[in-house]
Image (cartoon, rainbow, N blue to C red):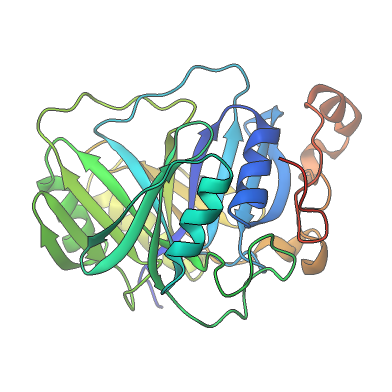
Length: 322
Ligand code: ZN
């Protein structure tokens, strides 16, 4: 059995308005909407999944839109920065693209020898583009509003802000099998699996920051990959034995999930690569309509009437809204 954690599976954050979120991530960042569904725990709200052309694990950023909810607070016990990998030499393109759309980007600056720029999504969620991506564009969505040579390749990593780093570092290094890859000031970089973009987690140790509060514009949880259900069972039992309060396995339809809080307070998930997003609609049609799990299908009329109407994603064929 291969219980190695290869890297990030997905990151889930909270948005305000669903349409604004959809327009930003498809229209500005050029990601593909790979699944339009509801929050399985609150089916009167959406769950939006963005990713690369195929919706591969390691490229998936998802949102629960909470319209009208207050802004959250960035702080300790949170994933405070989501970093995407873009091809080398693409930051000039991105700076111009963002600036043309009135989005202020900071940088570029170097971190661990890689050039990066930082900005925020419309709800204030901090995002970073890191120029460490593959020139290979085979997984880029061909209808993206961003030309393939500049398109986001997937995650580079996430940053966890912690009041102290030791216990989180011990979980990552001694339990989950990540390696320390670098240290710069109060930032410690870990890598999982084969290393490189999509495998990284930085732990930023701060002493004077308030605890974060999860609401609009903050990350809800970070999910790590496992290759199958057996590996997930291994982690469930191992973490349970170590005293973590691990949830039972939940069926998220596109993957199976367990959840627990790391010692600093960030909600972690361990999610299986299979079955993936093509389990309930063909890969060429991913994200083209609202899909519901079978247990909500009988309530479809009511659910559709309750959800705010969404205009479908911006694509290369229709890039002009926003
Ligand atoms: Zn999740």
